[in-house]
Image 1 (tube, helix red, strand yellow):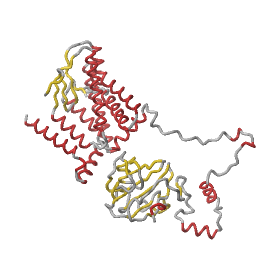
Image 2: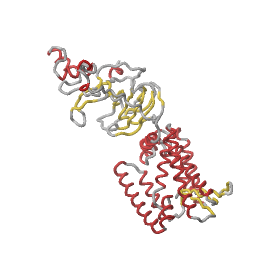
Image 3: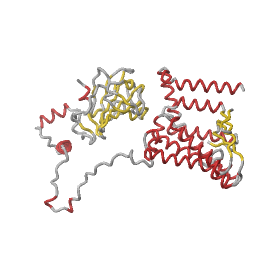
Image 4: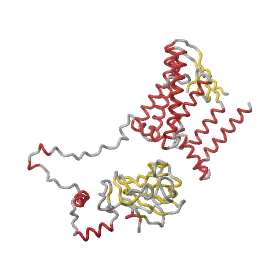
Length: 265
Length: 188
Protein backbone atom coordinates (compact mmCIF):
# COMPACT_ATOMS: atom_id res chain seq x y z
CA UNK A 1 0.00 0.00 0.00
CA UNK A 2 2.80 2.42 0.91
CA UNK A 3 4.52 1.85 -2.43
CA UNK A 4 1.29 2.71 -4.22
CA UNK A 5 0.87 5.88 -2.22
CA UNK A 6 4.44 6.91 -2.96
CA UNK A 7 3.95 6.28 -6.68
CA UNK A 8 0.73 8.28 -6.68
CA UNK A 9 2.45 11.12 -4.85
CA UNK A 10 5.28 11.10 -7.38
CA UNK A 11 2.73 11.16 -10.21
CA UNK A 12 1.02 14.13 -8.59
CA UNK A 13 4.29 16.04 -8.28
CA UNK A 14 5.21 15.40 -11.91
CA UNK A 15 1.74 16.49 -13.02
CA UNK A 16 2.06 19.69 -11.00
CA UNK A 17 5.45 20.40 -12.58
CA UNK A 18 3.97 19.79 -16.01
CA UNK A 19 1.11 22.21 -15.36
CA UNK A 20 3.52 24.82 -14.00
CA UNK A 21 5.82 24.46 -17.00
CA UNK A 22 5.65 28.14 -18.01
CA UNK A 23 6.99 29.06 -14.58
CA UNK A 24 10.02 26.80 -14.69
CA UNK A 25 13.42 28.52 -14.96
CA UNK A 26 14.98 28.66 -18.40
CA UNK A 27 17.69 26.13 -17.67
CA UNK A 28 15.21 23.53 -16.49
CA UNK A 29 13.06 24.23 -19.52
CA UNK A 30 16.06 23.84 -21.84
CA UNK A 31 17.01 20.53 -20.22
CA UNK A 32 13.40 19.37 -20.45
CA UNK A 33 13.13 20.10 -24.15
CA UNK A 34 16.43 18.36 -24.80
CA UNK A 35 15.13 15.30 -22.98
CA UNK A 36 11.92 15.56 -24.98
CA UNK A 37 13.95 15.62 -28.18
CA UNK A 38 15.89 12.56 -27.06
CA UNK A 39 12.65 10.73 -26.28
CA UNK A 40 11.19 11.68 -29.68
CA UNK A 41 8.45 13.69 -27.99
CA UNK A 42 9.29 17.01 -29.60
CA UNK A 43 8.32 18.87 -32.74
CA UNK A 44 10.88 17.19 -34.98
CA UNK A 45 9.64 13.71 -34.23
CA UNK A 46 6.03 14.71 -34.52
CA UNK A 47 6.66 16.66 -37.71
CA UNK A 48 6.84 13.42 -39.68
CA UNK A 49 3.55 12.26 -38.18
CA UNK A 50 1.91 15.61 -38.85
CA UNK A 51 3.09 15.49 -42.45
CA UNK A 52 1.65 12.00 -42.84
CA UNK A 53 -1.59 13.10 -41.27
CA UNK A 54 -1.99 16.15 -43.44
CA UNK A 55 -1.10 14.26 -46.59
CA UNK A 56 -3.50 11.41 -45.94
CA UNK A 57 -6.93 11.82 -47.49
CA UNK A 58 -6.67 15.55 -47.29
CA UNK A 59 -7.05 17.58 -50.45
CA UNK A 60 -7.21 20.95 -48.77
CA UNK A 61 -3.71 21.12 -47.37
CA UNK A 62 -1.90 20.21 -50.55
CA UNK A 63 0.07 23.10 -52.03
CA UNK A 64 -1.49 24.53 -55.18
CA UNK A 65 0.08 23.13 -58.30
CA UNK A 66 2.81 25.29 -59.71
CA UNK A 67 1.61 26.98 -62.85
CA UNK A 68 3.16 25.15 -65.71
CA UNK A 69 5.10 27.51 -67.92
CA UNK A 70 5.71 25.19 -70.78
CA UNK A 71 4.68 26.53 -74.16
CA UNK A 72 3.47 24.24 -76.93
CA UNK A 73 6.32 22.51 -78.63
CA UNK A 74 7.74 25.08 -81.03
CA UNK A 75 8.68 22.47 -83.58
CA UNK A 76 5.01 21.90 -84.36
CA UNK A 77 4.17 25.56 -84.82
CA UNK A 78 4.50 27.38 -88.13
CA UNK A 79 7.51 29.71 -88.28
CA UNK A 80 5.51 32.93 -87.99
CA UNK A 81 3.88 31.74 -84.75
CA UNK A 82 7.04 30.76 -82.97
CA UNK A 83 8.14 33.18 -80.29
CA UNK A 84 11.50 34.82 -80.70
CA UNK A 85 13.95 33.39 -78.23
CA UNK A 86 14.43 36.11 -75.67
CA UNK A 87 15.84 35.65 -72.19
CA UNK A 88 13.16 35.22 -69.57
CA UNK A 89 14.10 38.20 -67.43
CA UNK A 90 16.76 40.67 -66.39
CA UNK A 91 18.70 38.22 -64.24
CA UNK A 92 18.92 35.57 -66.90
CA UNK A 93 19.96 38.23 -69.42
CA UNK A 94 22.63 39.43 -67.03
CA UNK A 95 23.79 35.86 -66.42
CA UNK A 96 24.06 35.16 -70.13
CA UNK A 97 25.83 38.44 -70.74
CA UNK A 98 28.28 37.77 -67.95
CA UNK A 99 28.95 34.23 -69.09
CA UNK A 100 29.39 35.42 -72.68
CA UNK A 101 31.82 38.09 -71.50
CA UNK A 102 29.57 40.97 -72.58
CA UNK A 103 28.52 42.74 -69.42
CA UNK A 104 28.07 46.00 -71.27
CA UNK A 105 30.92 47.69 -69.43
CA UNK A 106 34.33 48.43 -70.82
CA UNK A 107 37.01 46.07 -69.49
CA UNK A 108 38.42 48.53 -66.96
CA UNK A 109 35.03 49.26 -65.41
CA UNK A 110 34.12 45.57 -65.46
CA UNK A 111 37.33 44.72 -63.62
CA UNK A 112 36.71 47.48 -61.09
CA UNK A 113 33.16 46.28 -60.45
CA UNK A 114 34.30 42.68 -60.17
CA UNK A 115 36.75 43.66 -57.47
CA UNK A 116 34.04 45.49 -55.48
CA UNK A 117 31.40 42.84 -55.67
CA UNK A 118 31.41 39.73 -53.49
CA UNK A 119 30.26 37.82 -56.53
CA UNK A 120 33.52 36.55 -57.97
CA UNK A 121 33.47 36.58 -61.79
CA UNK A 122 35.10 33.16 -62.04
CA UNK A 123 32.35 31.66 -59.89
CA UNK A 124 28.96 31.87 -61.58
CA UNK A 125 26.10 33.34 -59.61
CA UNK A 126 24.00 30.47 -58.29
CA UNK A 127 20.65 30.24 -59.98
CA UNK A 128 18.72 30.42 -56.73
CA UNK A 129 20.14 33.74 -55.56
CA UNK A 130 18.76 37.22 -56.24
CA UNK A 131 21.62 39.69 -55.78
CA UNK A 132 19.61 42.85 -56.33
CA UNK A 133 17.58 44.60 -53.71
CA UNK A 134 13.91 43.63 -53.80
CA UNK A 135 11.12 45.53 -52.13
CA UNK A 136 9.75 43.72 -49.10
CA UNK A 137 5.95 43.65 -48.83
CA UNK A 138 6.14 43.98 -45.06
CA UNK A 139 7.88 46.14 -42.46
CA UNK A 140 11.13 44.64 -41.26
CA UNK A 141 13.36 45.07 -38.22
CA UNK A 142 16.99 44.17 -37.72
CA UNK A 143 17.34 40.69 -36.20
CA UNK A 144 19.95 41.73 -33.65
CA UNK A 145 19.59 45.28 -32.45
CA UNK A 146 22.51 47.52 -33.15
CA UNK A 147 24.65 45.18 -35.22
CA UNK A 148 25.33 45.20 -38.93
CA UNK A 149 25.47 42.28 -41.29
CA UNK A 150 28.18 41.23 -43.70
CA UNK A 151 29.30 38.27 -45.65
CA UNK A 152 26.68 37.47 -48.29
CA UNK A 153 28.26 35.90 -51.37
CA UNK A 154 31.27 33.78 -52.17
CA UNK A 155 33.80 33.32 -49.43
CA UNK A 156 36.31 30.82 -48.16
CA UNK A 157 34.40 28.79 -45.60
CA UNK A 158 36.06 29.34 -42.21
CA UNK A 159 35.90 25.68 -41.21
CA UNK A 160 35.72 23.68 -44.41
CA UNK A 161 38.34 25.81 -46.16
CA UNK A 162 36.79 25.73 -49.60
CA UNK A 163 35.23 28.57 -51.56
CA UNK A 164 31.49 28.31 -51.20
CA UNK A 165 28.58 30.66 -51.69
CA UNK A 166 27.34 32.02 -48.37
CA UNK A 167 23.58 32.21 -48.71
CA UNK A 168 23.01 34.37 -45.68
CA UNK A 169 24.76 37.08 -43.73
CA UNK A 170 26.60 36.83 -40.46
CA UNK A 171 25.68 39.31 -37.76
CA UNK A 172 28.43 39.59 -35.18
CA UNK A 173 26.98 39.56 -31.67
CA UNK A 174 27.89 38.18 -28.29
CA UNK A 175 26.43 34.88 -27.15
CA UNK A 176 23.19 35.46 -25.31
CA UNK A 177 22.09 38.61 -27.14
CA UNK A 178 18.43 38.75 -28.11
CA UNK A 179 17.40 37.77 -31.60
CA UNK A 180 14.32 39.67 -32.75
CA UNK A 181 11.86 38.52 -35.38
CA UNK A 182 12.51 40.11 -38.77
CA UNK A 183 8.79 40.71 -39.37
CA UNK A 184 5.36 39.43 -38.37
CA UNK A 185 5.01 35.77 -39.11
CA UNK A 186 4.50 32.20 -37.98
CA UNK A 187 7.23 29.86 -36.78
CA UNK A 188 7.54 26.91 -39.12
CA UNK A 189 10.67 25.26 -37.72
CA UNK A 190 12.26 25.55 -34.32
CA UNK A 191 14.84 23.08 -33.16
CA UNK A 192 18.24 21.57 -33.81
CA UNK A 193 19.37 21.05 -37.38
CA UNK A 194 22.53 19.75 -39.04
CA UNK A 195 25.27 22.38 -39.46
CA UNK A 196 22.84 25.14 -38.56
CA UNK A 197 22.72 24.25 -34.86
CA UNK A 198 19.58 25.55 -33.18
CA UNK A 199 17.60 26.72 -36.18
CA UNK A 200 14.51 28.88 -36.40
CA UNK A 201 12.44 29.58 -39.49
CA UNK A 202 9.70 32.21 -39.66
CA UNK A 203 7.14 32.35 -42.43
CA UNK A 204 6.05 35.92 -43.24
CA UNK A 205 3.50 35.06 -45.89
CA UNK A 206 3.66 35.47 -49.67
CA UNK A 207 6.50 32.95 -49.79
CA UNK A 208 8.94 35.05 -47.72
CA UNK A 209 10.79 33.20 -44.96
CA UNK A 210 13.56 34.29 -42.64
CA UNK A 211 16.01 31.86 -41.11
CA UNK A 212 18.06 32.21 -37.93
CA UNK A 213 20.88 29.75 -37.28
CA UNK A 214 23.44 28.94 -34.57
CA UNK A 215 21.12 30.13 -31.81
CA UNK A 216 21.88 29.16 -28.24
CA UNK A 217 18.27 29.04 -27.12
CA UNK A 218 14.99 29.14 -29.02
CA UNK A 219 12.01 30.78 -27.35
CA UNK A 220 9.51 30.30 -30.12
CA UNK A 221 7.82 26.99 -30.85
CA UNK A 222 6.45 25.73 -34.14
CA UNK A 223 3.09 27.25 -34.97
CA UNK A 224 3.53 30.30 -32.75
CA UNK A 225 2.66 33.70 -34.18
CA UNK A 226 5.36 36.31 -33.64
CA UNK A 227 5.34 40.06 -34.26
CA UNK A 228 8.11 42.18 -35.74
CA UNK A 229 10.78 42.82 -33.14
CA UNK A 230 9.61 40.12 -30.73
CA UNK A 231 12.38 38.20 -28.99
CA UNK A 232 12.43 34.73 -30.54
CA UNK A 233 15.88 33.32 -29.72
CA UNK A 234 19.32 34.02 -28.25
CA UNK A 235 22.57 34.30 -30.20
CA UNK A 236 24.83 31.31 -29.74
CA UNK A 237 27.51 29.19 -31.31
CA UNK A 238 25.73 25.92 -32.05
CA UNK A 239 26.33 24.05 -35.29
CA UNK A 240 29.27 24.43 -37.67
CA UNK A 241 30.73 27.71 -36.40
CA UNK A 242 33.97 29.23 -35.15
CA UNK A 243 32.35 31.63 -32.72
CA UNK A 244 29.04 33.09 -31.61
CA UNK A 245 27.10 34.97 -34.27
CA UNK A 246 23.74 34.96 -35.95
CA UNK A 247 23.54 33.47 -39.42
CA UNK A 248 20.54 35.16 -41.00
CA UNK A 249 18.97 34.17 -44.32
CA UNK A 250 16.09 35.67 -46.24
CA UNK A 251 14.30 33.51 -48.78
CA UNK A 252 11.33 33.71 -51.01
CA UNK A 253 10.03 30.58 -52.76
CA UNK A 254 13.46 29.00 -52.98
CA UNK A 255 15.37 32.17 -54.00
CA UNK A 256 17.83 33.60 -51.49
CA UNK A 257 17.89 37.39 -51.19
CA UNK A 258 20.69 39.48 -49.76
CA UNK A 259 19.57 40.55 -46.28
CA UNK A 260 22.26 43.23 -45.99
CA UNK A 261 20.08 45.70 -47.90
CA UNK A 262 17.48 45.64 -45.15
CA UNK A 263 19.68 45.37 -42.08
CA UNK A 264 22.48 47.84 -42.55
CA UNK A 265 21.27 51.36 -42.07
CA UNK B 1 -10.83 1.41 -7.25
CA UNK B 2 -14.15 2.85 -8.28
CA UNK B 3 -17.33 1.68 -9.89
CA UNK B 4 -18.97 3.37 -12.84
CA UNK B 5 -22.05 2.08 -14.66
CA UNK B 6 -21.51 -1.35 -13.21
CA UNK B 7 -17.89 -1.57 -14.34
CA UNK B 8 -14.97 -1.59 -11.94
CA UNK B 9 -12.21 0.86 -12.89
CA UNK B 10 -8.69 0.42 -11.58
CA UNK B 11 -5.74 2.72 -12.12
CA UNK B 12 -2.28 1.48 -11.25
CA UNK B 13 -0.11 4.24 -9.73
CA UNK B 14 2.86 3.24 -11.89
CA UNK B 15 0.76 3.93 -14.97
CA UNK B 16 -0.30 7.28 -13.51
CA UNK B 17 3.37 8.18 -12.95
CA UNK B 18 4.28 7.11 -16.49
CA UNK B 19 1.43 9.17 -17.94
CA UNK B 20 2.45 12.21 -15.88
CA UNK B 21 6.06 11.86 -17.10
CA UNK B 22 4.94 11.67 -20.72
CA UNK B 23 2.79 14.76 -20.19
CA UNK B 24 5.73 16.56 -18.61
CA UNK B 25 8.12 15.79 -21.45
CA UNK B 26 5.58 16.36 -24.18
CA UNK B 27 6.69 19.31 -26.30
CA UNK B 28 4.56 18.62 -29.32
CA UNK B 29 1.00 18.53 -28.07
CA UNK B 30 1.16 14.73 -28.17
CA UNK B 31 -1.07 14.03 -25.19
CA UNK B 32 -3.92 16.22 -26.34
CA UNK B 33 -3.85 14.63 -29.78
CA UNK B 34 -3.45 11.08 -28.46
CA UNK B 35 -6.48 11.27 -26.18
CA UNK B 36 -9.24 10.93 -28.84
CA UNK B 37 -7.26 8.22 -30.60
CA UNK B 38 -7.02 6.08 -27.48
CA UNK B 39 -10.63 6.78 -26.49
CA UNK B 40 -11.99 5.77 -29.89
CA UNK B 41 -9.83 2.65 -29.93
CA UNK B 42 -11.18 1.54 -26.56
CA UNK B 43 -14.69 2.54 -27.56
CA UNK B 44 -14.40 0.25 -30.56
CA UNK B 45 -13.50 -2.63 -28.30
CA UNK B 46 -16.32 -1.88 -25.85
CA UNK B 47 -19.02 -1.48 -28.50
CA UNK B 48 -18.02 -4.71 -30.23
CA UNK B 49 -18.05 -6.51 -26.88
CA UNK B 50 -21.54 -5.18 -26.19
CA UNK B 51 -22.73 -6.14 -29.68
CA UNK B 52 -21.46 -9.72 -29.33
CA UNK B 53 -23.37 -10.15 -26.09
CA UNK B 54 -20.50 -9.91 -23.63
CA UNK B 55 -20.51 -7.70 -20.58
CA UNK B 56 -17.62 -5.54 -19.49
CA UNK B 57 -16.71 -6.28 -15.91
CA UNK B 58 -13.47 -4.53 -15.09
CA UNK B 59 -11.13 -2.06 -16.75
CA UNK B 60 -7.56 -2.00 -15.44
CA UNK B 61 -5.26 0.80 -16.59
CA UNK B 62 -1.76 -0.44 -15.93
CA UNK B 63 1.74 -0.18 -17.28
CA UNK B 64 1.10 -2.97 -19.76
CA UNK B 65 -1.86 -1.20 -21.26
CA UNK B 66 -5.57 -1.00 -20.71
CA UNK B 67 -6.92 -4.42 -19.87
CA UNK B 68 -10.61 -5.18 -20.14
CA UNK B 69 -12.06 -8.18 -18.38
CA UNK B 70 -15.38 -9.28 -19.75
CA UNK B 71 -17.87 -12.03 -19.01
CA UNK B 72 -20.23 -14.09 -21.09
CA UNK B 73 -20.30 -15.33 -24.68
CA UNK B 74 -17.88 -17.89 -26.06
CA UNK B 75 -18.42 -17.90 -29.82
CA UNK B 76 -15.24 -17.42 -31.74
CA UNK B 77 -16.54 -14.97 -34.31
CA UNK B 78 -17.78 -12.53 -31.67
CA UNK B 79 -14.45 -12.53 -29.87
CA UNK B 80 -12.58 -12.08 -33.14
CA UNK B 81 -14.75 -9.12 -34.01
CA UNK B 82 -14.36 -7.53 -30.59
CA UNK B 83 -10.58 -7.76 -30.78
CA UNK B 84 -10.39 -6.46 -34.33
CA UNK B 85 -12.88 -3.65 -33.68
CA UNK B 86 -10.36 -1.59 -31.74
CA UNK B 87 -7.82 -1.14 -34.55
CA UNK B 88 -10.64 -0.89 -37.07
CA UNK B 89 -12.22 1.99 -35.15
CA UNK B 90 -8.79 3.59 -34.86
CA UNK B 91 -8.23 3.36 -38.61
CA UNK B 92 -11.66 4.83 -39.34
CA UNK B 93 -10.96 7.71 -36.98
CA UNK B 94 -7.58 8.23 -38.63
CA UNK B 95 -9.19 8.51 -42.06
CA UNK B 96 -11.90 10.87 -40.80
CA UNK B 97 -9.52 13.09 -38.83
CA UNK B 98 -7.01 13.36 -41.66
CA UNK B 99 -9.77 14.15 -44.12
CA UNK B 100 -11.02 16.85 -41.75
CA UNK B 101 -7.64 18.54 -41.89
CA UNK B 102 -6.10 21.09 -39.58
CA UNK B 103 -3.06 20.76 -37.38
CA UNK B 104 -4.69 19.03 -34.40
CA UNK B 105 -6.81 16.56 -36.32
CA UNK B 106 -4.15 15.55 -38.80
CA UNK B 107 -1.76 14.92 -35.90
CA UNK B 108 -4.44 13.02 -34.01
CA UNK B 109 -5.33 10.99 -37.10
CA UNK B 110 -1.70 10.12 -37.73
CA UNK B 111 -1.28 9.07 -34.09
CA UNK B 112 -4.42 6.93 -34.35
CA UNK B 113 -3.05 5.37 -37.54
CA UNK B 114 0.23 4.59 -35.79
CA UNK B 115 -1.63 3.21 -32.76
CA UNK B 116 -3.80 0.91 -34.88
CA UNK B 117 -0.87 -0.33 -36.95
CA UNK B 118 1.18 -0.94 -33.80
CA UNK B 119 -1.71 -2.83 -32.26
CA UNK B 120 -1.98 -5.01 -35.33
CA UNK B 121 1.58 -6.28 -34.82
CA UNK B 122 1.37 -10.02 -34.10
CA UNK B 123 2.76 -9.81 -30.58
CA UNK B 124 0.76 -11.25 -27.71
CA UNK B 125 -0.25 -8.39 -25.47
CA UNK B 126 -1.37 -6.42 -28.52
CA UNK B 127 -4.58 -6.86 -30.49
CA UNK B 128 -2.73 -8.42 -33.42
CA UNK B 129 -1.27 -11.09 -31.18
CA UNK B 130 -4.66 -11.87 -29.73
CA UNK B 131 -6.12 -12.20 -33.23
CA UNK B 132 -3.28 -14.55 -34.11
CA UNK B 133 -3.95 -16.59 -31.02
CA UNK B 134 -7.62 -16.90 -31.92
CA UNK B 135 -6.77 -17.90 -35.47
CA UNK B 136 -3.62 -20.01 -35.17
CA UNK B 137 -3.38 -21.17 -31.58
CA UNK B 138 -1.39 -20.29 -28.49
CA UNK B 139 1.96 -21.76 -29.57
CA UNK B 140 2.09 -19.97 -32.90
CA UNK B 141 1.12 -16.73 -31.20
CA UNK B 142 3.92 -17.07 -28.63
CA UNK B 143 6.59 -17.80 -31.21
CA UNK B 144 5.42 -14.95 -33.37
CA UNK B 145 5.35 -12.49 -30.50
CA UNK B 146 8.88 -13.52 -29.51
CA UNK B 147 10.09 -12.82 -33.04
CA UNK B 148 8.27 -9.53 -33.24
CA UNK B 149 9.63 -8.35 -29.88
CA UNK B 150 13.18 -9.24 -30.92
CA UNK B 151 12.74 -7.51 -34.27
CA UNK B 152 11.31 -4.39 -32.65
CA UNK B 153 14.23 -4.27 -30.19
CA UNK B 154 16.73 -4.61 -33.04
CA UNK B 155 15.02 -1.92 -35.10
CA UNK B 156 14.82 0.29 -32.04
CA UNK B 157 18.55 -0.02 -31.32
CA UNK B 158 19.39 0.63 -34.97
CA UNK B 159 17.21 3.74 -35.09
CA UNK B 160 18.64 4.99 -31.80
CA UNK B 161 22.20 4.64 -33.09
CA UNK B 162 21.47 6.17 -36.47
CA UNK B 163 18.98 8.90 -35.77
CA UNK B 164 18.93 9.26 -32.01
CA UNK B 165 15.24 8.42 -31.89
CA UNK B 166 14.43 6.60 -28.68
CA UNK B 167 10.72 6.00 -29.22
CA UNK B 168 10.94 2.75 -31.26
CA UNK B 169 13.40 1.27 -28.74
CA UNK B 170 11.13 2.24 -25.85
CA UNK B 171 8.24 0.56 -27.64
CA UNK B 172 10.34 -2.59 -28.13
CA UNK B 173 11.38 -2.61 -24.47
CA UNK B 174 7.77 -2.17 -23.38
CA UNK B 175 6.68 -5.03 -25.60
CA UNK B 176 9.40 -7.33 -24.31
CA UNK B 177 8.62 -6.43 -20.72
CA UNK B 178 4.98 -7.27 -21.30
CA UNK B 179 5.99 -10.60 -22.82
CA UNK B 180 8.25 -11.36 -19.88
CA UNK B 181 5.43 -10.65 -17.46
CA UNK B 182 3.23 -12.80 -19.75
CA UNK B 183 0.22 -10.58 -19.77
CA UNK B 184 -2.34 -12.58 -21.64
CA UNK B 185 -5.16 -10.18 -22.02
CA UNK B 186 -3.58 -6.79 -21.97
CA UNK B 187 -5.23 -4.52 -24.43
CA UNK B 188 -3.97 -1.06 -25.28
